[in-house]
Length: 182
Image (cartoon, rainbow, N blue to C red; front, side, top):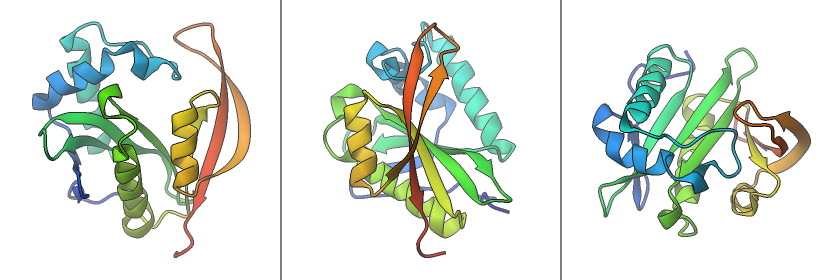
């Protein structure tokens, strides 16, 4: 099995990556309602706490069905959930997967997403034995592009993606990090 039976908790210097719970709904709502968090993604801000509860239920169901792993990123000092990071679109046969991530604006630019990303990559490569991890980011999302490049991801493709929630065309850079330890 590529995903552990027990949900993995990852601890870094400043963060705890753990399973989200319905008790996290207020922190996650703060993140998901912020329009800045949706600037480069084909998604809409949550308009109510109930929408966030539905999102959390969907994420927990996907975990239970071994579709993905999504961690709540808890800031140790503040004890607040400041973002999420996931390994999803998992191809168990080819041992490939995709990363998704986000952190609330007030915590951006502090190196925290890099901590979380490196923790998730380590788990994906060492525990899940993945061969590679991909990440897609809008080409104008400079900070996300820099984050991936600083973590040794390489651009392997550029794709255009028609928005589902809006009429926008997204110009996505596809990044890949290969597992060199396998």
